[in-house]
Length: 488
Image (cartoon, rainbow, N blue to C red):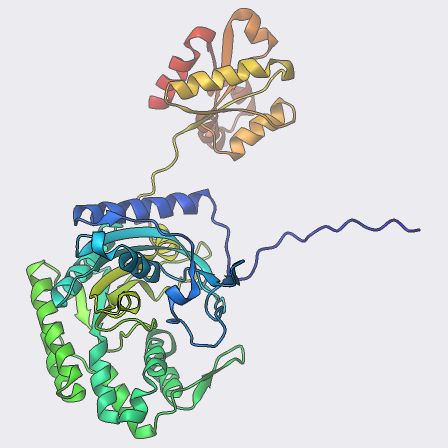
């Protein structure tokens, strides 16, 4: 009987998911820390919610369908209830606020960062798992709270390393489009969510792509077809004219929109933008830092009033020189009905969110993110395998002195170990073999200095004789000698 071949799984990542290496994680943590300092300064409190929520608690604000896992990753628990990985941090906040409503000081001002998951088609720069960082005010009515969020978003941009003129916050109010749809009739209002999602793609697809999505539909480059809103040509023209209304100032945009939105709900949206403009001006957010743009609607279905997106005005590039395409790096808005799904009563709320991974990648490429480099690493070489306890003790002494150190625990001779230290970017390597031990000494290789000198030296003989990056110290002053060398 032939021996059955052992199964070996292929090492591969699922599409739409990414591995994040140390440099990316450090950049992301630096960005989250900068944003968190802003949130704390503005009086927000941290909160952590679980990765899983009941699917009905999350609601269906991503693409609508009958099955619970359309747009989300869902599973059925042993009690036959559907649970889903959170697709953002706002829906879990609404559940938390409703669950603890009587005990919370309102407005409840919280910030949170963490992983979110979306069961969507992946693409360049579009992942199914990513990190978000949010700030929200629950129980905060009126345009004043929205203006605060917009100003908060602007300050986060500055805290991340951007300067005035390198970013812009684009602001709109969902009620303006509702006013346009009122003018188009009841049939158009029934297609509100489809129209919103079509408009939300304006920055990516342009006028022609949005025109197709407002009409019969659009086929993308892969051949996938997206069903359109089915508006009539004259209705599409009215929507597009509204989207392209412009002015040189925030007040100018408000004046240009008056003829498009009617006297009902659209007028309420315009009045809110007027109050937001006044507060932003008082907070020092100038006309270039925040603009009113009727094409900003946001794709999520729970927004009810003001909405906004932050956009980079610089173009970061990949190492090969190709431009990074990011679109907005942060967004937010008002969602007065989300908590009401649980409480049965209106609970006003507004918030701001940014995608940490994408924003950190852009800032890193621009050289604007001050991600602290790790402390210099010292590797203690395992020159003699039967002396590992001593090498661990040395590494422990270095760590106790506040240095970053490890004893080598892999296999291989001294040459391979030094190569390992080089690949780790270690600053120094400590070598104590039998000869050094007998003399009560330790040999130290300054790997960082050695790399610099190796790039400059032309005479190998001089290199071998001088060895300026290698020195010997007494064992009892090993730690202090390394510390002084690193400080220099």
